[in-house]
Image (tube, rainbow, N blue to C red):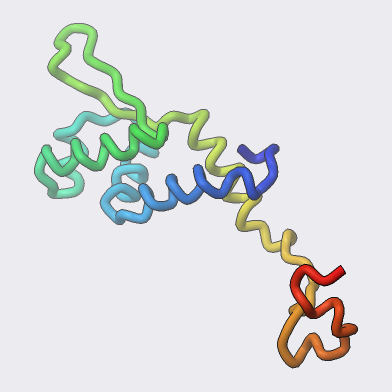
Length: 127
């Protein structure tokens, strides 16, 4: 996402920010930064019921940030981890989107600060 224009990144970025805007999801991501964990480990660390952990993990999986793997010996066990590729991509996108060096000097096109502009430039769509 970082190599495309910022405008093209707005919708996916908003979707990720919305998902991460829930504090428990950020806590889960923070725990998964420590490595692979199962639902019960996450629930214990966060003092949350398994169904709530599962709900938050589902949302994080839908945005592609969390991946799941079944245990090879007992398929009832699920292990969750961060999608490193997606995390790297988000880091680059956030870094670019919130980069203060992108801010340009600009005067407003209307209001008292714009009175120095010719009238034609103040009217939206003026030629």
